[in-house]
Image (tube, rainbow, N blue to C red; front, side, top):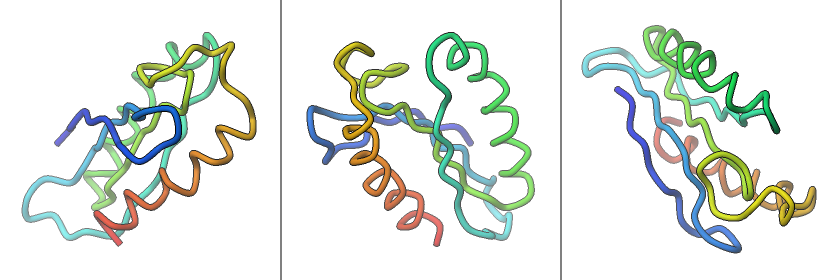
Length: 102
């Protein structure tokens, strides 16, 4: 199951993310947070990351692939993003998969 979402609660707006979860009836093993690479690599890696997340889902893992501020489909422009902003995003982003599939 792949579910696109916008996660709220972040400074400067929502973050785009993809949930990739096991099918119904598959025993949950826990969750994984996946952060996309930056720049051209982000566009090129998206397909590979989703394929990886699907394989993990087959093994029972729920994966959240998140675009940090100023990257991918999240709010903001790359030139506006800072390392401090991304560091602030990570704890909040990591709480979502923990809550959904501990």
